[in-house]
Length: 188
Image 1 (cartoon, rainbow, N blue to C red):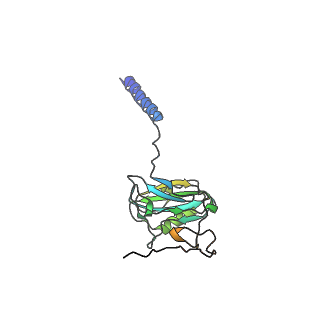
Image 2 (image 1 turned 90 degrees about the vertical axis):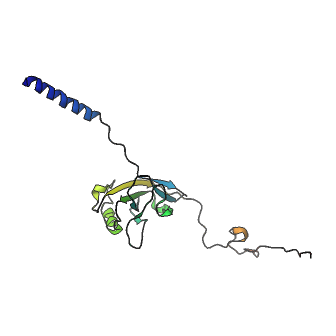
Image 3 (image 1 turned 30 degrees about the vertical axis):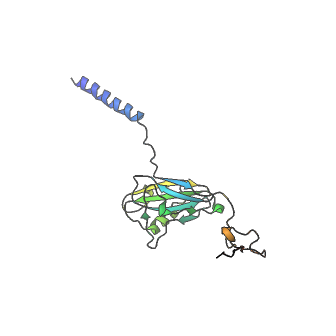
């Protein structure tokens, strides 16, 4: 009887090993998307089912780390699903090259200063995970990439003429910024 028990045990264990080898790794969960809104601007949009708070950091190819969600309390902010984080677009300096966007989702408002320091300490790592951080509560980290492109040069400090048109001569022409309005006398 022990021979049959041993044989059945080996078969069961063997079947378990085979089924473990055939198991596929879990698919990567996408927690947010980056949406290009201009040549060097982007929106970060969390997908459905994420933790309620988040904060954003970028790290450029040149090693510059920027905190994008800076508040007076310097804590993570509320992030609603399918809406841009902070209802805004973020500009990435073209001269700094491609950036990695780190989105830290949390179940409570987390102080951003400690996250910034830890991210700075981990700057040489190719990948940063929630296990690398010393933070309270539940934390998920999503890493996205964005490459800014040069676009039309921005016009700042120019004269706007009639109809909202920017004058090409910078306002030096005699009629720059003026419009002619003719009024006909009304017949009574």
